[in-house]
Image 1 (cartoon, rainbow, N blue to C red):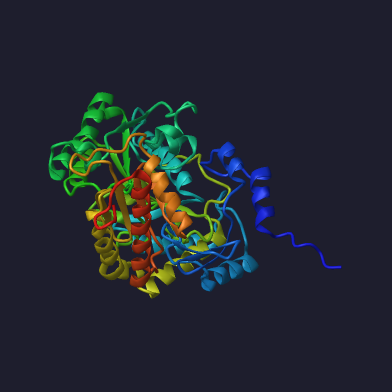
Image 2 (image 1 turned 90 degrees about the vertical axis):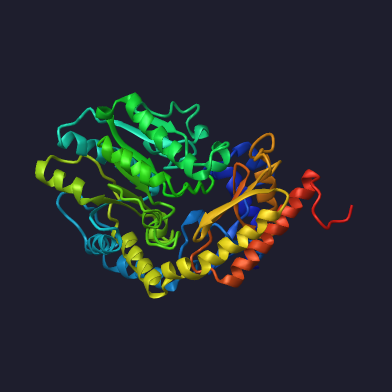
Length: 465
């Protein structure tokens, strides 16, 4: 007698409800829905669920699967390293070869002056490390009072207590005793929402000077660092005006405040350069990375540290009482090296900059004429389409976020994975996506925006009355 088939959609969904606590989930809502959609396979930019449906992944997992799914070379890199040495720590004056080789490679790829790396396993850990490392640095140079951090509203820097404090997502802070003391937030460079009657250029200066005002309010002698994503990804793909980052840099230098670039989403090719800081002309002191460093195949993060910081630490000495069990995990680092090799060999950074990035941006901008679309924004293979009630006045729909969820759900139902941030639909596909796959992604998105308009009772040009 044959054994009953255990691996079924119904069983997996039941297990999801019974035993699995998913991140960022309303558990009552998920239970009512009977569990999650079960993803079982991936190849290129395509996923397959347990019912056999093929989904176009317009989000590269969570902004991370840069080289796409099904890369045998990455599995082989992990296998080989696991056979040789699956794990050993980097504590107590020991190291293993992969994190050292990867550190050398990262120093080669990073902007000039970044020659030291501190490893973790996630972007959250990287940004948590930045808080400790910045305070350690200021202690070492005799300025221990510099303890405070400045970030932006809608910033996302992770989910640990420190990284969620750095972030500006109020839903992640309310009810959790966050932000912790010493963390402050200012207006983001989000012209569409906050720019009013100002030009984007004038608003960029104004948004940057909100940082200066906060520094002066706290006291420059107390501010350790300002942290910002080159492009605020999970905040809604907020692309700052061209005037913003130059003014931010001037302010940080003037008041002796460290500048931290959170490259967790923008790093490793997303903007058409190895790092978003290069695309936007930022010269940071610290850069946090994760996600695309392994294309999500294994957990890994790295803080890239500029010489101006490490030189002081080497000169002053003193133990840095911080680290993780998996800092410099040899298998994860071996996969990262293989992943970076694929990006280089296939010219994915150049392809994003010269071919697929411009194509995605051009196709997305065709949606600007849609009655629901207030703004289209993006750089390279990251973009957003903002849905609004009134295009002329930039007026949002009531109950901000509701319309975005309607559109996102239509996307999922039509087998294209995109994400809603408030009422913006955000896009971040694998870097290997082709121009024809971009066309299919945007065509499906247009259809889903049309379906959203239908649900809202918004008439479409050319539609029958």
